Length: 84
Image (cartoon, rainbow, N blue to C red; front, top):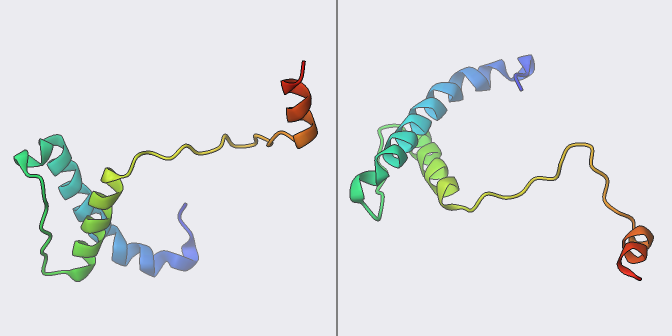
């Protein structure tokens, strides 16, 4: 979500993120051109760091996020439903 108090950071980092995202997306769409490793170099260290982050996130299995508004079951309700 855009926050006006962070407009300067947003303007600085948006281009870096978009460049990194597009390189990551291109590599993934093209099966990394058959490569098994990626070496990241860039004139901008921020772009390199962001691209390395995008590539690392791609390797992680997706994590399940809890549904918004869902309530965890209380222990008494859970134990009552498992007993017969």
